[in-house]
Length: 248
Image (cartoon, rainbow, N blue to C red; front, side, top):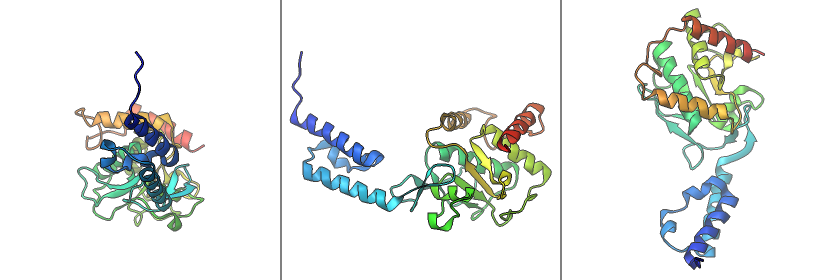
């Protein structure tokens, strides 16, 4: 049986397609009242215009060192927002939401529990694009894909800021993240306070690792806050293999 779609149904479909094509994910921010009413063409144009203005205010059009787009503002209708780190007395850390948030929060949390307790001001997230050096890994801060942990304790350009056992924990954290996270201490110009996402947008490893970490939150004896032994042979071997690969 053929059904003649109503004018309302057709208009809603056209509205969704047009808005999606022009502003991508910004269609999700259309006012709630639009879902229950017909949207005429003038209303649609206005919503698209507003979404384009938001994009212009937020997006830089320039990728950071790891390929993610740097954003000009945070906590303002973009992809980067202040996020809590459960169990850690920090102000919200500005980072890209979704899988990246899951992974960076895991890194911060393990640092807190296994290396040294963190307090307010110890973790730096997003920074404005104009405040970071574009050719270095620190530019990843501007895309919300990196954090600096205690930058005052691990100055840029210096190595050896971690005690040997602390460095083993760092390696173990990286191994658990399966190469999705890189430590700035391994870079040619070391930045031992910096931890950043080391895969481009759309990489399946990012999704897989985030899913693994989320699953740990529901399993006793898994995830951050659990006493782990980085000297356990299997764990140390995995850390050494990853360190050798990331050093290439």
